[in-house]
Image (cartoon, rainbow, N blue to C red; front, side, top):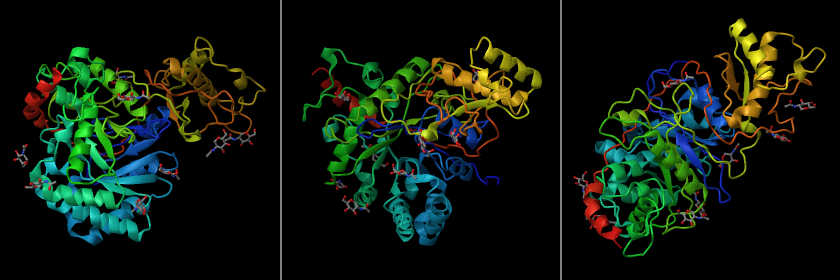
Length: 496
Ligand SMILES: *[C@@H]1O[C@H](CO)[C@@H](O)[C@H](O)[C@H]1NC(C)=O
Ligand SMILES: *[C@@H]1O[C@H](CO)[C@@H](O)[C@H](O)[C@H]1NC(C)=O
Ligand SMILES: *[C@@H]1O[C@H](CO)[C@@H](O)[C@H](O)[C@H]1NC(C)=O
Ligand SMILES: *[C@@H]1O[C@H](CO)[C@@H](O)[C@H](O)[C@H]1NC(C)=O
Ligand SMILES: *[C@@H]1O[C@H](CO)[C@@H](O)[C@H](O)[C@H]1NC(C)=O
Ligand SMILES: *[C@@H]1O[C@H](CO)[C@@H](O)[C@H](O)[C@H]1NC(C)=O
Ligand SMILES: *[C@@H]1O[C@H](CO)[C@@H](O)[C@H](O)[C@H]1NC(C)=O
Ligand SMILES: *[C@@H]1O[C@H](CO)[C@@H](O)[C@H](O)[C@H]1NC(C)=O
């Protein structure tokens, strides 16, 4: 089935959870020329033990590929569909039936993100936002899924004009008539406020006012501690300050018990001549420190007990995105599966279980000479244990090159993956989530083997893309102008 329309697709990556249940996910836009298949995207998620995914839309290929994986999924209602849903309960019900009911429970859809930064991206349709959420919710109630699937609407930091100091932050009052019912909806349905927060823009638009350490979660010199003068809370990172600004803005409406979830945050690894801070080093630093920060399980200073569940923007670089060069370079991976920079989706908690197993096998139709060379290399220099594919041993039959190469490739991959070993073999190998074991032939990494292969770190893995999952991102990352006005206030604080 072909997709009629290219729609934004945002995957949330839920990494391993901390003891307190905090998790980090990753967004995957799909505005990519050589778009990989849904199966390939899911293979990357599994290879990195990513347990949660968010789609910007409800792409059927992705939702199918995610079924029976244990990965939790947030689907998205694209902005383009919002007007019709917000005007018609029956359109909303159709949407739920087609995109949610028909996939549950094999695809674990846990939330619906309604629109993308609607207030700042297409303010004209703001009046239908909450009605759309209500109609979608009614449809979930009718399907008896409202306790299982939550509804929220990601918003940009831009709707908080002066986020610093956090204790005095408030939503721009021109949005009162949308924000108030939105918060009411979230509280009544026990849902989270979805926030897109980018310290990258906070830092770069700050024109040097903010130290880069503050944006990158690095420790600040003692003379530059950032303190809210009203609460005396110390803010170790701009990320924490943005989250707290949102909590205080919500509190200004007298709502509490609405957790803030970060639906997007990230740092570009490359940019134009006027974007000197978009470097792989900064991106790696930001995301590494972010993961550590979030997985420690604590909340921001004003809400220390509420973990900041977060989705990194984004999994794959989107080379088709318009705008500044940096917008094409937020990915942790290139679309061909090579890592842009190493990022350890640190495995500090429970693994997601057998569902995250990934194997490396020979591709169908791979060139015979290359396969033979790959097999020889794996069993020789690669030091794979090839005993099982010798005559008379459990994996000898079927006695063909593809089967033997698969066994050897996988053995090599399971042993060497953490040390940077790749599943490539001159393009003849691919990763798969399907356990290739059969009969008494047990592949390394299979849940039947005791020598479990840890797969907690990334490195320079390469996985071959196939086909396309047909969805693209039109995510807007708007300039955070609020910062400009905030700078003078905040500047004074930095000398405290
Ligand atoms: C789906 O995700 C929810 C939320 O984490 C979890 O409680 C539930 O067990 C998952 N369901 C399945 C079938 O994996
Ligand atoms: C609040 O939003 C309105 C409408 O978008 C905008 O014109 C105004 O400048 C904003 N106020 C502040 C303080 O940013
Ligand atoms: C929200 O949480 C409260 C308290 O835990 C519970 O009583 C209520 O049923 C929940 N409502 C929904 C819609 O989840
Ligand atoms: C909403 O708007 C009015 C005026 O536009 C303002 O006075 C009020 O403080 C705003 N905020 C809340 C939380 O009602
Ligand atoms: C978690 O991170 C916060 C913010 O950086 C910090 O204040 C807190 O001490 C950390 N907690 C632990 C247990 O490391
Ligand atoms: C993947 O793409 C990147 C960027 O285009 C390129 O630098 C890298 O060499 C490619 N990797 C492979 C294995 O083709
Ligand atoms: C996961 O693995 C354990 C043993 O390693 C096994 O008992 C269990 O049945 C497996 N679960 C699934 C869903 O395969
Ligand atoms: C695990 O091993 C047992 C006995 O060797 C076998 O019966 C079973 O099918 C294997 N399971 C898998 C998933 O390979």
